[in-house]
Length: 311
Image (cartoon, rainbow, N blue to C red; front, side):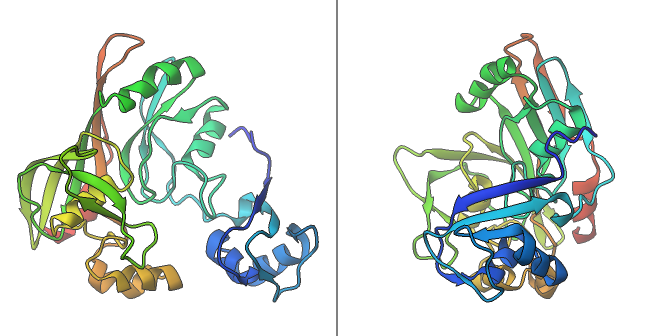
């Protein structure tokens, strides 16, 4: 692996959240605790240019510098990344359900965009779309600026045929799900979306085969748009949230408990699975560079193994 990004990265930004203990913020955002947290506060944190005391409060508008190191991150649980397809301009791989696509929270080096750049030695490699951290399946990257300029518009023009599998708590029914997704201002979960009816819907999902799966439903989905949380919020709006989805679980106390404790095990009796059962099974499109039709299927057995015991 080529270390394109060295062994540490300095994050510098202005804090714009409610006041809290700096130590609590570092634990929540970067998963630092115990000796690692103490060492970071002593040697690798500057708050408004000063080394902070352990009980220091961080306030809106404060300037934070944090030296983030490779060893700080949760390790990549997989043995290797699975390549699905590669040509001069395009790379497709099977995204594991444990890593974000781009740097987020405690992940920088183990965000897929950074990890794959270092594996390939290609700093120009860019993801062409996003999958949630817990969603697995086919993920596309452009290998060059030329490729990105030609391939990215396929998503913007909705010319990418996307097929997903989900295991749901109920049956969403056969009808297309459509409407406008807006932040749910009545929810205690600040990043949760709600589907609103609209005569000019900005989000639309086709529902394919629905198969009873024990007391659940295995559902094939074809999103025609690519809005944030689209499939998760669409299914929840039909009373069929995805098994293991904390944010869209019918009782918000589940997500709020997880957000506070970050302990999935205390919630498994309700969530059933340790992560949301959503998987991008295939992408199909006409490659504007080669002119050929490509259908890329995820070959890994992980999603099937995840839901098999629930049938």
